[in-house]
Length: 205
Image (cartoon, rainbow, N blue to C red; front, side, top):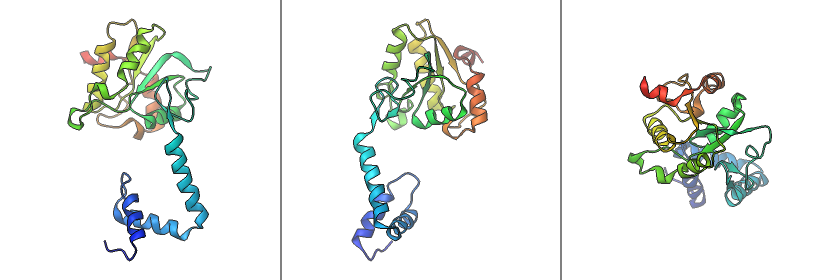
C-alpha cells in the first residue's frame, strides 16, 4: 500500500496493530478521523492515554477497575462466599449481562496454554488458592470456555483445590464445546450459570 504522506502511513500502521484490523480497515478509520473535527480526535487520544495511564487491576479479583477494589467486590449485595472463575474481563461482562450471578469473580488473566508459553505461574491461580485457604469461600464456579485450554485450566485448578472444603462446580454445558464464554448468548449463558454442576461429575462422564 503506497502512501502520499508519511504521517498517514504511520497512523495506519499503528491502527493496523489492533486485533482484527487490517491495513485497509485501518486506512478507512484514519481517514474517517481526519474528516472529523480536530477536537474529536483529541478527545479520543486523551481517552486512550488516560485509560492506559490510570487503569488498574482490582487487588481482590484482578478485574479491570478505576479504583483499588472494583465496584463488584465492594457491592454489599453480592455474595462474597461464591466466586466465579473466568478468563478475563470480557467474560465478567458477559456473565453480568445475564443478571443471573450475584457472587464475586476471580479473573485469571488467561488460560493454561503450553503452545503459547502460558503456564499456571502466568495466571492468578495462586491468589485464588489463597482465598480458598482463608476458609471464607463456600463455592468456586469454574466458568472457562469449553476448549482444550479451558478444560486443562479447570483441571489444574481442581487439583489445587481438591483438598480444601469448598464446593467446586462448573457451568452446565449449554455452551458448545470449543465456544468462548464471551460469545455465548445471554439466555444460554445465564442458564449455564444457574444449572452448574459439580466439577467431579464432569470428570466421571
